[in-house]
Image 1 (spheres, helix red, strand yellow):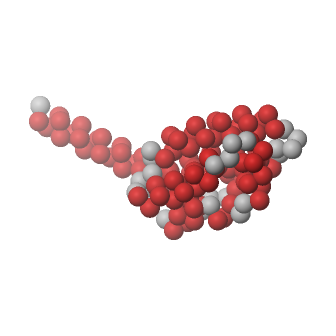
Image 2: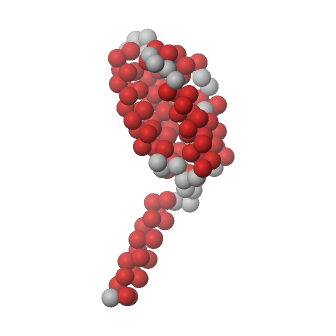
Image 3: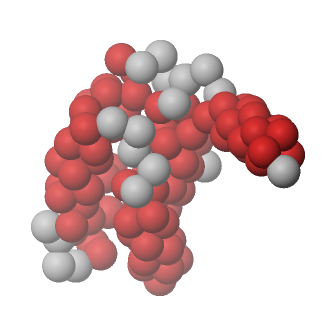
Length: 126
């Protein structure tokens, strides 16, 4: 019984290591980049499709709430909180879309923090 438990622990540990990969920030950064990339892309089309932006923004903000839980350390969590706050201060979709269109994606706090962990995010991640 003890040998079986030890084997299970070893297998589980191996599976968790495989999921984590070499860079624990990679999964978090990729998830953030996917969600925010969609948001930036939709913001660029706001004038032509405001309802579509609203749908994408709602979905992206919900996804970002989930993504935060995957932050592997305090540095990435702080960067996320700063970037997320900047996106939540707008009461109207038009204001958020305008902000995102005028914002340099490379200056996003999470984008910069992920770069420090060797993960490059691009605005066209969507």
